[in-house]
Length: 155
Image (tube, rainbow, N blue to C red; front, side):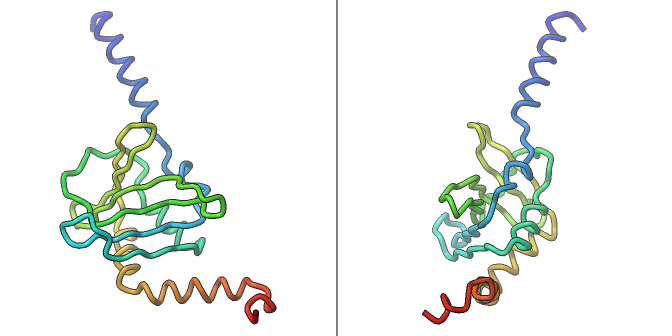
């Protein structure tokens, strides 16, 4: 390798390292996830689910792959919005696809496009979330009421 080739390799490695992000670290402050499902073959909202239960949030975040993936050309079935709801801050928005060989998230961060795989448990979690929306929202409501002081529930 000549000097110029070494310099180009070094620049490439630095740029690649700088654009790589730790998704779990980025999403660490998430206290709410909005799951937005699109209508088939359209980016029109069909359904929205709001998760605030820590166990659900942790499960979904842990299903996201850590390594950068090539850009998929599969289209999107919905969007995830990771929030710090208490301070009304959106940490990250990512579109997703749940198809068997195309399960992934795609998002912009620091003006760069990133793609991560969603593992099978994440795919199943998102599919079940939509199917059992009322059950999940009911469990979350029950959890909130359990945490609220009794006098606030009665008023």
